[in-house]
Amino acid sequence: MPVIEAQNLSKIYPVAIKEPGIKGTITHFFRRTYRQIKAVQDISFEIAAGEVVGFLGPNGAGKTTTLKMLTGLIHPSGGKVKVAGHIPFRRQEAFLQKITLVMGQKQQLLWDLPAMDSLKINAAVYNIPEREFYHRVGELTEMLSLEGKLSQPVRKLSLGERMKAELLAALLHRPKVLFLDEPTLGLDVNAQVGVRDFLREYNRRYQATVLLTSHYMADITALCERVLLIHQGKLMYDGSLDGLLERFAPYREVHVELAHPLPKEKLALYGDIQHIDGRIVCFMVQQEDLTRTVSRILAELEVTDFQVTEPPVEQVIGRVFLEGVISG
Image 1 (cartoon, rainbow, N blue to C red):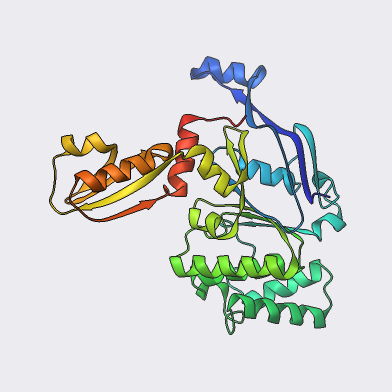
Image 2: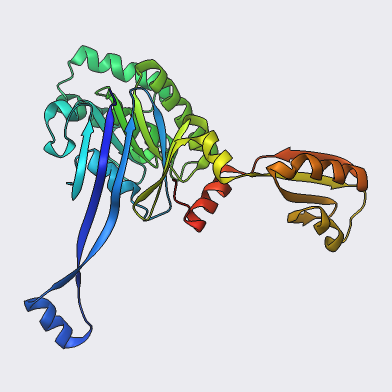
């Protein structure tokens, strides 16, 4: 049975239209007219227990709106949704015990108090016995490398330490379903790696189901085998990350280091040039032409080194959104 089910899920916001000037203000006061903003449009997907799924899309695509419907913060305009056997917007206690929502730009820890004080409040909210509370705090503290940090006021922690402490607070009740909205937002590279390692270990240890949104593609490639792509409120792709590359990137990048610089006009005869930096040239070559093109380059040009790579994932996804490719 899937842990997360969404069937034709939609959210439409009515937005009042106001004409400029005094007349527009008076009319707006007595007789308002509205236009419909379709934030999410008929999206359907299922996520099984223990899956870690990336949820990708540009700003305003509908990612956060979808997460809020899945966690019960807002009521859908249409469709059906079920998470861990519950209908989210009913906000039943049994449902809230099974899920958590972490938003990288929001915080629940009290700024001037030690993180431990906020954790004790969370333990009371979730009815966690004292012995079990200290056991869980110790376990998560070790997993997150936060030893000695929970007794300090939150405002004195680094950004990475605060984010880890926020994760600890959000996972104290040991939820089985994690909704993570930009959990590494603003963190430095080392802190991002630490959060990713923790999430990977938490998923392995507790078989938690994770739906993750992030603008850092390293988060997605490190944690997710499957991705959902949403654009303008519509689900464009649901499948493996490798399948996404195969479908939307039917080309490879050929990086060539030449013995001597050559004019761009001559190099253009061998393929589409991505960029030139002195003697180093990057070609974009269709996959079916790859063998023939590489053989020709090696035979006809003085090459000191070359490498064939797949295009960066963010480049592929950017192309999907730019062209508005809809999956069939």
